[in-house]
Image (tube, rainbow, N blue to C red; front, top):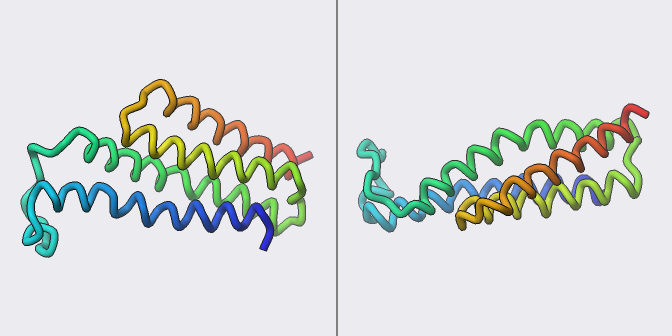
Length: 130
């Protein structure tokens, strides 16, 4: 497996962490019975980090297909190299940093992490196109 695909796999697995983080927070707030139910009742008085975790999860899931497509095109076309490998690592680290800073409420770091992931993605695009 290439570094690029390993990073893509890690991003996919990171989705599992992000899927469960807000759910666990809501379950702690609402109780185990709520967590095992159909969750008809929407939690209201929850900690702010739980709302941020929900938004971090949605942001990750919104960006994952775009990032995956770019990495996969580089791999399928054989245009992956050390530059795409480094860019894939930057994407992985910055996306995890984005999620963690979002959940923690570190507003200065979150946009920096997002921007880094976009720059790294366009670095891969440049390698594919040129």
